[in-house]
Length: 300
Image 1 (spheres, rainbow, N blue to C red):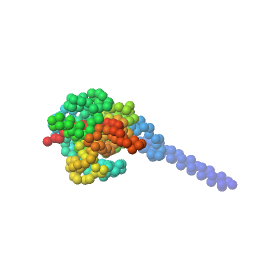
Image 2: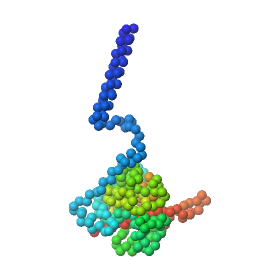
Image 3: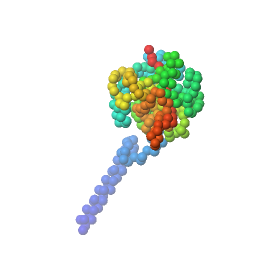
Image 4: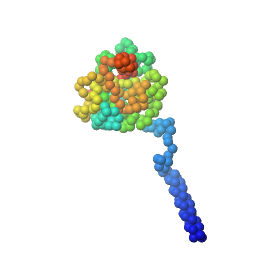
């Protein structure tokens, strides 16, 4: 009996020493700045997660490119060309395959084209939400081409590759600011109150471009195809013809998922609205597209 009691006492003593040692080790880790395992961490609240995703740092312009940057047309910023991985193998089929693309230096509008700018060139305003500083919307691809023609060489649509390169700002994450939605950078369905907002109301990306994610969708120049066909690595322009043009960037009524950099939408170049199919099979052109655009300009 005494032997049994002694054995129990020794076992209890060893257990107490072990627990004290573990406690001391945890304290030392905390003291040294080491983190506990992920399973020990509390779930991060949405606000804290968003704060941790704020990683946008302006891209510095090298001395040799400073002259190009200084010569940027009014309202445009200099985009230093380079190579990047375009597309996404882990989302929709039409975002595949990931492939390396290289683009030349170019200029791009800092803001989406406003209604004031559109009216000055075109003499009309097709937008649903009216305001001089709001982005123009309800414009189809052919309308934009008429605007470009009247701009006397000061505007062209970016290629899809140029748009994605500029919108990324060098980021490899879901959005140019990180992998979680951060309302400091975008107008979308959760914070827009179902309307567009003045351009430049949110924070810009690394190149100084505003509203690349949200506010209104943006036309690009490429014809749409359901997956990327790798024709050339340098300055790709998509297929030579097609039925629909590519639209990028998401809008004020888009979900968080639709805002991702690689997301692609398409629409016939004559359409101003997305057709809606009723329960009786009739097609009704009553769904607003909220598509606008921004200009690009090549650098000789």
